[in-house]
Amino acid sequence: MTQPWRALTLVVLTVAALPALADGGKSYTIDVVPDLETSRGVFDRFTAVDLNNRGVVVGDARGSVIELEDQNALFFYRNGRVTELDTAGFRVRPLALNNKGIVVGRTRVLDDIPRLLRVSRGRKALLLDAGLSDAELRQLRFWGLGPNGEVLASVGPLGEMRAHIYRSRQSRWEPIDTGAAEFDAAQTFAEAINRRGDLLIVTAHENFDSETVFILLADGSIQTVATPSGGVFHVHQLSDSRIVVGSSSHDELTSRAFYWDPVGGGRTIHPEGYLDSFASSINRDGTTLVAATRDPDFDLYLYFYYHPAEGLTQLWTREEFRRLARRAGCRKPKRASTGGVFMNQEREILAGLECTGGSGSFHFSRETGFTLMRDVFVDAGFKSRVAFGYGINDRGQILVRYYDDARDRFVVALLTPAD
Image (cartoon, rainbow, N blue to C red; front, top):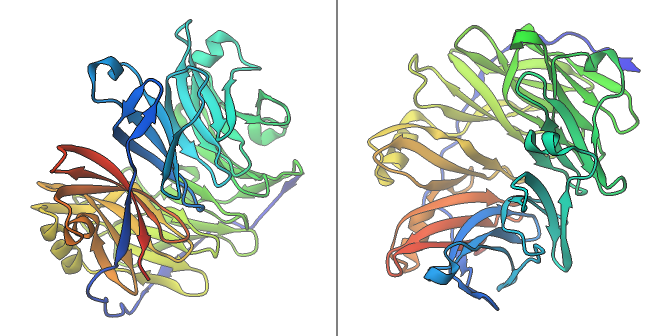
């Protein structure tokens, strides 16, 4: 059954006073992922992909010798040891890792049809193709990996895509459609799944002139998520307590961050006096990360925490962010990169710098302020020009890929808080 909820309300939010930032940054121990030795040879060039809450790292490894240039290895790193996952001979590009150590990747087999593949340590890889035709597999688009190994995807041509899910107990792809009126749309997308098994569904109507957001509960019932103007885009997140955050169109150019929960309904969480805003992530206690700008050119977005009990809290000022950007070599800072902003349960943030003339990632917390990832390596005696963060877990560990000047190549490392 469909459960109605009251319409979304507009709340004009003032921003809490900004506490003084701490100086000195955060200290870490650095564990460099060692070369992967296999029967095929040594793989020594790594690309980091994901990090889970157990400190497990997964990524792609390649060799620097000619004999290995057309090969790769799916590596799994934990507690100082790097091993190769058994991909059954398939060349796999890893996409995601969950807290159970399950990895989903993409591969191509002899018929050149792209397929998703699921693998974990100690188990052989499983091709995820049951339930779909060859034509449907060619139109399969990966959306996400769930906490219990569920894989979300869309199937179909642009304009006719339908949400699908692959669960271990069914061992096949199945369309997500209960037959309810909410699924009567041109396209459906499963954007997230929580630990309860609830699914966040977005449906797009013809010509994308409107969208509907709802939660398909594990018991099959539906909770409609009220959003302003009916147009929803950018990032959507679903928490275990069924909180939904995202952004809704305000006019042709700007958006407004929104926050919805089953008790309080929906609200716009837009900082007063700002032009554009969006919500990019949420943690388990309901804290949401909001980015907003006053700039008509949509430059220099600032970030805020939002929590219903606390309102909006600004994290840094324009000048503080500019000083950080100058340290990283940026001439024209724009924002913390919208494609790579992570927040953990302790409200620590890992983000990339989006700017002209420089690059890299930084860590931020209210206790320690800004820490450039590059500076962590330089202070430890490494010769490195740049370091990119790929994830932060709830233990505060950070997955980094940095350029090692001494070896003239990128290297993957796991940073663990020293305190």
